[in-house]
Image (cartoon, rainbow, N blue to C red; front, side, top):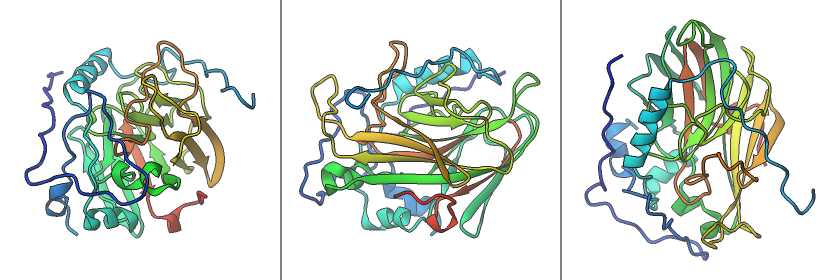
Length: 319
């Protein structure tokens, strides 16, 4: 296979600057050295037409998946790409951009590895990947969570993001040894286009083939739920709340962040992002509400699917 070179994303867009932020609470921008340039919100309109006190013990991680694994070369290439591509700094979106998301006018970015089709039907996006498609990702063009506008530090109220995916069909996997499937998740940008959500920094994902959940985990994930069945609708949400005692290693207060998972309209599982973690586990940088988060669907092999961002099409109603 020809090795591709992926350049880092462009620097700050011209003429774009931080705007004053509403709300009474101060929003502290991440001071981590890995936070990089601004997101390209400025040209979106041109691109898209219109026990009780102690945490529970950590869930044991898996070294490999029993149903399929990406190549170690792809993983190493992604690690190098992320090291060279700092996370975008959050900025306050324009009123037009922000309202596009609040009104559920969601568009997607298709990675170059995506071989298939995606089109809008009523309130849903319906798509497929061709048999044998390699690992690829679909992300929303705009964040579902804008850190500068949605953070509870700014609004003084909690924020929940959520969407659903229906698995319509499964065909040939990326290789004869690997199953086809999808992952429902979220990513902080930029993110490597050949990696599913949950495999790299600033990302989480729950996978259809084995039901495992991944948080910045290039190995086998953690046991979480049962594999998805064709015809099922699954949903993934994140809720950000003001901190009580969540403090990072620098002594900085962090938002309380809970991830929840639904199946056919029923809440079936969740976890605390700040749960106790194994020493080998990757960090949670980019997922704590201090940078923007985009919905992301990982795809591998031939998959038929449907995505719904509008509440009137959801089977589950978050609080």
